[in-house]
Picture: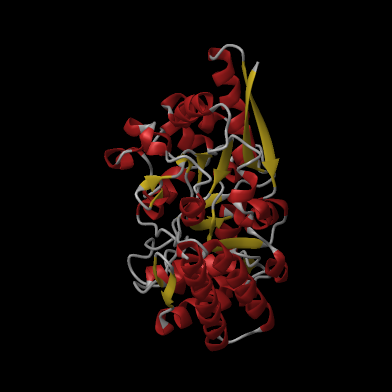
Length: 396
């Protein structure tokens, strides 16, 4: 029997659709097996793909890894084999820049299977108790936060690396002055937009539950479902599955609440894609499975029925999916379409990890935007010089 392996990340949004898709695939392809292996969210966010590409045929990953993949060539360029599904004309088939975000250095390194961006989440029952409308802007978020605190309730946010940093990057993009970069690293961190974005994040944290300083995005969702004192979060990677009716408390969703109009603009796109290891011994079978994962059968029907979050626009606009997940898709679609693509140069993932640690620690300890920006600039210079040295070394 022929077998391929898929490395996924641990959450029902990821694993349940994959299990169902595997079952549908293996019922059609005789004498084959697809084995799913899972890793924690922290490994998904930071683990080197070059190392693990030797162990698995297919790997679920996020677009900031594209530069490292392009440099190491640990994945197979997919546009050479799935031209119809992944050409430039196919961008419109996917929600927002989901496909475009995996196109780097002239190749497509991942086939989008999951769509997400930073968006707002809230408890409708608690919001109603406060008599407050859903915030659309950062100013309205702070108004809600002060009202919540007067009534013994809180805002929520995710601080644990890299989530606070990514929220700051989203605010900067919303302000029209995101971090600047080229193919070799970050070239500038605009002072004014960074200061305003960092202060916005600190203001939200000051009105949030104390435990937020140790939470990632999943922790925050779990807390908002499991306890009754966190009303609203303005920017976090959303999980449609927390809008399902089988939960203790059903979450509701809204667009990213930015600082400047249009407020939904600038949220840092996330989501995932499937990459094909160049070390796979069964690339034909792996490519067939990728094509299966991009089909409407999977993206519209299977993903939506199994706690998942499709990358296809058809999946996002499907009325049954939207209803099942408490209108997650219709409420977040504008933020997806107006989302910002994070840097993808080789070394960005390390910047996101180490920079995320700097930002998280500063927010916990009351650090200033000036000191944090200087630390991030030093890190950017260090990593850029590292890239320059590696490039020179490879030429030598």
